[in-house]
Image (cartoon, rainbow, N blue to C red; front, top):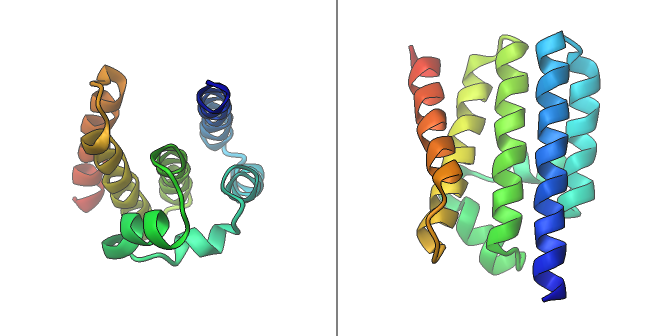
Length: 139
């Protein structure tokens, strides 16, 4: 019970942080958004941002679940951070890296949804939105 409460609180905190990051990006304060994002990896996932950035898409879920003992909740958090990373890269004009992070975010979200026992309308909406952003980024 306490672990579920802790996980729910972590997911609420990451949602608040992502909203803040997206607001900073929208205002054009990319430097501050970058600093917050860098700290978020360490604060929420206890690893440096470069560790996650360097993981190839093909081994993303396998490596994190088996070699690093992450849970689906960790993967959901990482999916959100990758989404913010994509938005930041797109705002900087780096469509290639933006597309890469959208794809990583989608991969993690689809994996956690497939492994989940419950249906989430918000996650399905997020998956659809990510697919649209990937399509647009590829144009």
